[in-house]
Amino acid sequence: LPAVLGVEGSGVITAVGAGVDASRVGQRVAWSATNGSYAQLVDIAAERAVALPDKVSFEQGGAGLLRSMTAYLLLNHYGRLQPGQTVLVHAAAGGLGLVLTQWAKAMGARVIGTVSSDEKAALAHSRGLDQAINYREQDFVAAAREYTGGRGADIVVDGIGGAHFLRSIEATRSGGMAVTIGSISGEGAPAEALAAAQLRGVLMERPS
Image 1 (cartoon, rainbow, N blue to C red):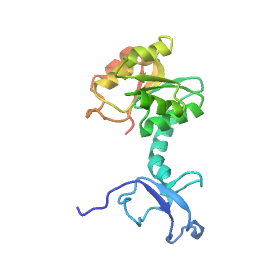
Image 2: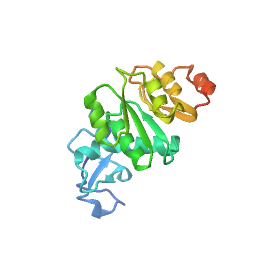
Image 3: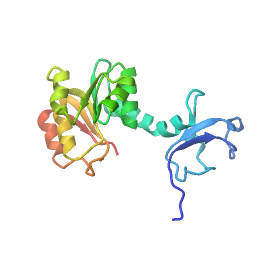
């Protein structure tokens, strides 16, 4: 400090620099990966300013852009999701979980999600979730296998980390993909995760 916090946001373009199309002035945009975004005026690179459709609010754009890019990369680039496959999303009622659910459904997938309450299950269902697993009441590995005829999910997205990721590998079908993307538990993927994935015949991705 002193420092201006924030790396993502939204607003209206008020001025442009040399070489930038002047018609962009007045355009509603959102951005990410820009330090100092929690300010009234922010200087951002033109290529980072993504135009917002009129039906998308500033709040939705600012909060959703990075999550949407993350969802795209996880499902398309890493997971290579195909129509008819099953995705298990942890924290399905969270910001990323809700976007992942909607994106996967739009791609023709079946989505199973873990939640901690009936209220969160209802929220996730309202965004298209097919099957909610209350992890406080059910073992998510057993439930995921039950809902997939004993196979396990084709893709599992785990933002919890630690020993939880080992269980996510157990919930993934042989030949499927387990993706670890965070460490809500305070721990990243454990060292034994690779061996566990190899033993089950599961592909593992850890995007940086």
